[in-house]
Length: 101
Image (cartoon, rainbow, N blue to C red):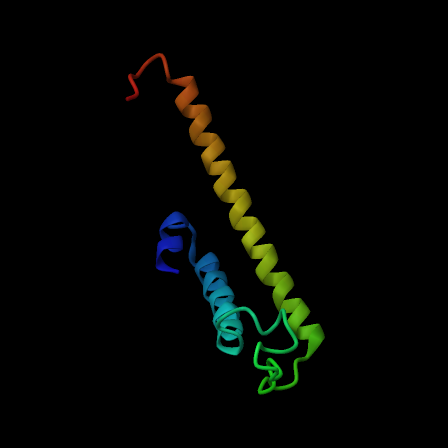
C-alpha cells in the first residue's frame, strides 16, 4: 500500500485516515480469503466447502463497508484522472515555450 500512498501524497490527514480504514477492510477480506477464490466458488477442487471457517457475516454491514471502499476508490480514481488531465493541459499550454524530450 505504500506505493499507492506516493500517488496520493498530497492528501491531508482525514484522507490518510480513510486510506487506513480502507486498508483495514481489505486486509480483513484478505485474511478470510487470501486467494480470492473461496468467495467465488462454493467448493474446492477436492470437494471441500469454501469459507467453512468464516463466521457469520452481517450482510448489511458488509454491504455498507464495501460501498464505502468503492466510493473511496472512485474518489481516488477521479482525483488522479483530474491531476493527469490538468498536467496534460498545462504541458499543452506551455509546449511552445519549452522543449520536451
